[in-house]
Length: 318
Length: 276
Ligand SMILES: Nc1ncnc2c1ncn2[C@@H]1O[C@H](COP(=O)(O)OP(=O)(O)OP(=O)(O)O)[C@@H](O)[C@H]1O
Ligand SMILES: [Mg+2]
Image (cartoon, each protein chain N blue to C red):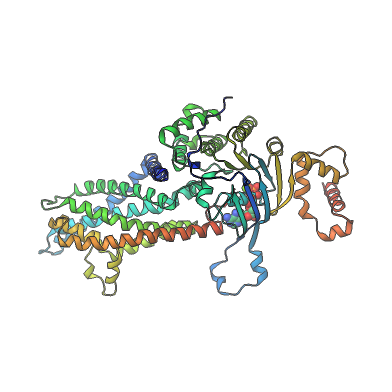
């Protein structure tokens, strides 16, 4: 595959980036969502307990640093706070506690600068469905300061690279399959050559070949365009193949962090196995952690023993 | 300078996108046009029937024109206003709102880019409606001063935009029924601005409300242009122009300010979007 000739992102011209800064520094970030109360009950005073019940701590005191040109994966069960975290990095949600810095710029105070450095692909392909991929991407490109002619050329190139047939480029997007739409979404983010790319389950719903296409593309973006990438995924093979490091998040907290090989060894050691375990088992191990109470740790002597007992119990139940 | 080019490109992005959307949803435009024409016609026929009710002294031509101007201005106001409040509604409906709010553009550019299209669209739409409805009546337009009419519409647009931007926060804050809530603002403007009647027939306590509605001034200036052929530089037109300038100069920044407060609130509470 030929490498893509993306011109330097013209938005970055008048932004100075201090090479001493890491790409992403997340420092003690939390996000709490409140469910709204029914209108009539607002007159009554509410007990503290009930109030806490209406709160969801979606992200809970997260610290994470991503170095330049690093590909970091965020793994976690449904509802563990991955998308919420990504949204706070993309200036779409304001954290309740803590700070986020992107290449040294604060996501709230320097919102305008941060927006020039990043782009994000969300799990659902969000487009004007009646418009064609070309029209949708042209709109995006203009928002990111590209001229029409330059954009049209790049859009065709990038969509073709991702395997979209030429006759599809000008037909309404609603007729495309979900996977194809997702590819257009990925193209839209790549088009603006962000130096930090936030990918929220970008390959969910793609066939195996398309997944590899996207992974190749992500790697290329890092290797050729010096991009830093933060990616969430439910595909453990993908995490292993793509990520330099992964963070496992559970109930809004980071419960493990490191290279995939290292994590596999750690979990094997905990379980007293000689062979490294699979990434799937690593995931199961850490995301089951919240099931273990302090009481159980006391009862079984150590956390590891409690975990083993719990796993055994689960196997028995099955 | 380069940032200026960027903001100009971005503002064009909204124009082009909305034009593309209008093209793809063309059937919807026709439905709207038929709806508006039917409404306008039924009101204008009311004027034509005045004679039958014994209104011998009534100048029917003038009454029909009076109502026709009312329906046209009202249609222009509605379509433009809707175009502005739609800037949030459409994106919510399509699911693109996060993509647009993440883009490196100022909110001013975003709003101006969307309004620019709303005005062009509203003018074209109203002109078509006027042509169709006008063809049903034998109107004596010998005295009409069209320059004054267009001038009043354009000056008035600025204030409509301010109101529209302020109203567009409703769908931002109330995810489900927000756009319906913006109908209230429109209904109140219709009530107090003397669209189909003279302000003087309203109860005294309501009349001051007419003074803060931009539509009142647009209608006064426009009617005097079309009915009496008043030129732009006449005192009557000027008396309708300066309040519009003041309302515009106040309402646009206030609208954008309200919008930015609502945006912050939405970003704090997770109201922009939540799935994924
Ligand atoms: N805008 C919001 N308003 C209220 N609650 C929210 C909002 N966004 C997320 N939540 C809640 O926060 C928690 C974390 O959700 P989030 O979407 O971050 O999970 P996730 O890890 O991305 O899950 P998935 O793997 O299913 O995509 C969930 O309990 C969710 O219901
Ligand atoms: Mg998610």
